[in-house]
Image 1 (cartoon, protein in one colour):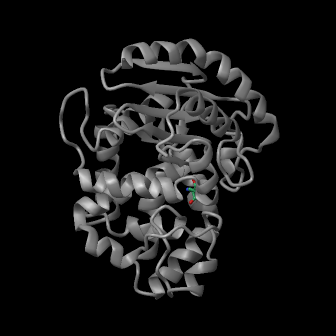
Image 2: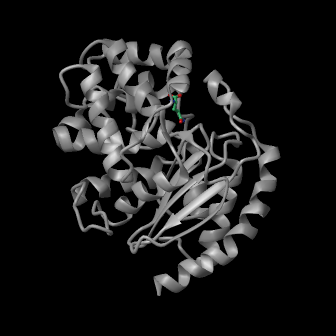
Length: 313
Ligand code: GLN
């Protein structure tokens, strides 16, 4: 059945992609990380992979882009594998904020210093400090190794220009990190924690890399091609639930209604999504809507999910 459907997806995909691409002109490329402003505004690419390793793809799938917030899903999982649920959820909450991903508003307002969830910037910075390793380089190397394993791509690496560009301009994230430190949420030196965070945000991928990572999540932590368990099922369940409730920032409710699949976006225009039990999906479209999600990418996922009735709900 899946073989037939993937062929059908491949048939329809180029046409849907070109229709969705027309949305690119209504969005903007992120520029608060200066290097990201060089991203091609009209680009759109998608790669969908099934459990047999068959793929459907269309558009600018050769484009490399940085994972940005998509990496937060995997640092959360690694922090859970390193520390267990009690330690992790002592430092970050489990609730969506309804605010922008870089908002500080609720940090002080509700429960002092505890970020609402691990997918907003404050939460992900707290998670970076929980990655095991005796120094920032070792922690970052562990994250990169984990991403290489999940993507089945041993050459994944940092985009050092994006890394430096973010590190040089991250006043808001830096201020949040100091606030977290003051509240006892961060372990270690603030700049060391931020370095781990900037590095994982700057890991460069293609749509196929994201699709492969998503495929592992879609199969509850197992690589369906090899049968190898890469992540305990419980931690995949936690990650997928956060992807539904907070993965598309403060547009997660709308995305759940229109698409109905777990997903995580990044300001580079990347989106990782999946059809649980079936497909891994990697997408890029750097033109962003007002909430910071790929404007054409969201439109494309809506079209495909509705056509194939993929919504979980
Ligand atoms: N590195 C980015 C930041 O901290 C990640 C944000 C995002 O993708 N939404 O601002």
